[in-house]
Image 1 (cartoon, one colour):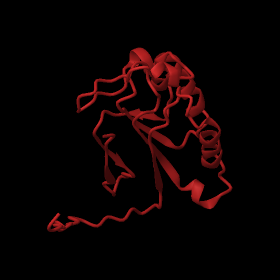
Image 2: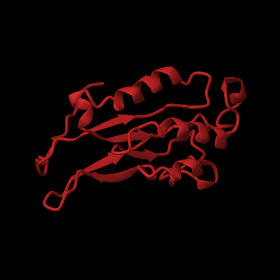
Image 3: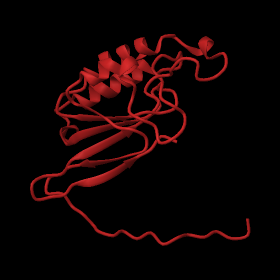
Length: 167
């Protein structure tokens, strides 16, 4: 490398919402894998539900940006790495866990390469054939990958546009 070029970062507009709300971003849960950190993830959900913590009350959005499940047949000999070898069952179990998240948190879900969608981007929303239980959750919003999602909009505030991408 001979040089590094830093392009100018231009913020076209500085926005500030009237109400302070938080968004959390996670990815790569890989539920169904032997490496899924279920105990840690359940502790995370317990944290989200602890409304006695002042910062937790401000959490209004949970973005899960790809690889929610481990999938099946994603790479050669993946079967040896799986705890659950059926993608529909993986989504069922994920849904049971996400049901525990308090209802006023919007869960925005976009797919990743392990989630049973095509590998080529842009990727469509999760296939209802396999992920049907997630579609029944009232606080879940499904998107493709990549996706723009607007959060925090009110009658007099346009909200924030968030770009999600699982590469």
